[in-house]
Image 1 (cartoon, rainbow, N blue to C red):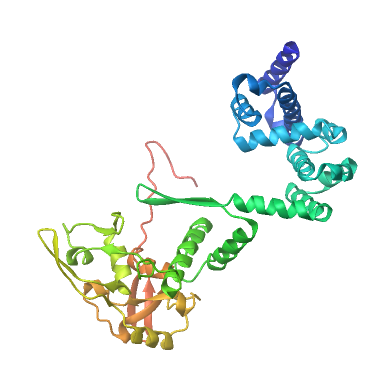
Image 2 (image 1 turned 180 degrees about the horizontal axis):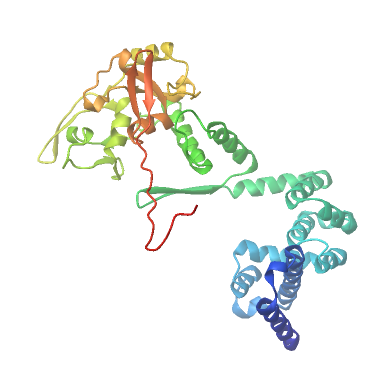
Length: 395
């Protein structure tokens, strides 16, 4: 057996070193790789039966992951496929001959693994091979789910609950950026996806964001909307909110002013502070030698009456082409409030999260014109092409 493996190694090396890869059929090559994956699964299943993992005191999955350099999920997948290929010789032959791919084989094997043993005989190999030849892997997954539900609804429901228990969400901060990772169940994921997609379309003026950036902003908008509605559970009698610590000098972006900070101590841009101050609740705190000597009463920059008046004048975000509804906007001072702008109704505009940020942090300007206001983008720097020594421009 070691000699046969050595001959396989030599054949692979000869192919990699001498084959003209421009003329290699990728489909045929992929079939060969998938066939070897099936062989690996069989080898690993035989090792599991022999108890090879017991020599190192590991579980079969951990042993496979360490031996083959795989993730735990990939190792578990190989063991599952190896186990069921033993019982499905026609599927094993179809994989070995390149009729079906490894991923399709994995779907079939996992489908069989999830069925009760007394129902596995109903899993016709010929039918599944036919479906695998005609369907995409995604459609094969769909078919497996539906057939499993029809054959064994109780087991299907149990599987859904097992998936639900795997849900998690992790939010961590590193170098001033927040990293999010998580897994949601089918219903929860569909709900979040629907909410994000409804807010992740390009909107109005200056929207040059990538799809990933639009989805990230949509998630932030959902969070802001939930906090602004005031329906979230309160903590110590206060509804969830963003707290910013700043000084008058920091709010005005004066040179040498200390950085403004979020509640957890993260420094933020003064431009961001100015945007948040447009519609924030301000509380004056006086200090002497770093000791608090007086705390003023919290007051809103824009009063509820002014906000109602703004809603009466506008039905959506005031940026050209933006259809965000008025309840998804916040008041913006045409002349920045931090620069002395008055909080008069005539000086306020409703802007959605994206366009409000464009005006403050993105360098856009809002100026008054005869028939209202105009949004002016920042000057763009066009990079100059420089010719190297001895180079000429192409004709």
